[in-house]
Image 1 (cartoon, rainbow, N blue to C red):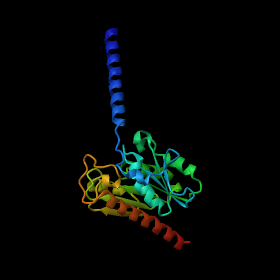
Image 2 (cartoon, rainbow, N blue to C red):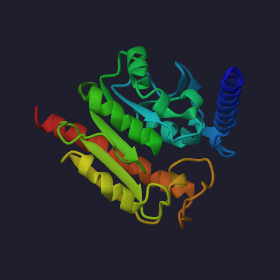
Image 3 (cartoon, helix red, strand yellow):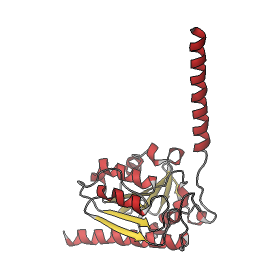
Image 4 (cartoon, rainbow, N blue to C red):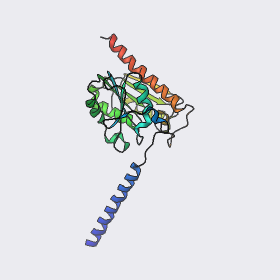
Length: 243
């Protein structure tokens, strides 16, 4: 009986080691930014990268997609900072926002002069931004999702949402996006980049399971920046009119 027990324990420990080693190997793989992305690099600060003036009135927090390194979204930080927004893109544990969805709290505390905060993310990063929004919506002025759907029920939250998806997305497919639309509030603006795909929301090259796009990443980036800037601007203009 004792030998059987020892064999069982040994087998269990061996299984745990296999799982641990597999997890470490999996965690070591990431989607790195393509060559040239460093041209738009931000400043490494507070567990991530900042772009623009930290004393700006409007700040943006952006959660990267799963296993995607934060500098694959340098274009978003750089281009939005050129429009006078402050942007922070955090580095998540093992590049998984699901392991630190409340990272936004640390960022906000580090930049107290920002008056309005918008949070968003790509893919799993967007889902975690939505999860954060469910619990901390009173700290936010808006949520934006790039090829991301909310598993959290936000229908009772009085907060504007910008939902940007892609018609040729092979991961956050149009069918899957439609399935989760029920979780978004009435104040949701929906944009579909018909020829866009999943990977083109970042700068990390092709992604397994995705569809091809007739757009270059830069062309899709330009659409994202334009829509995001116009959305935030319209919300602030509306707020001024209502004063």
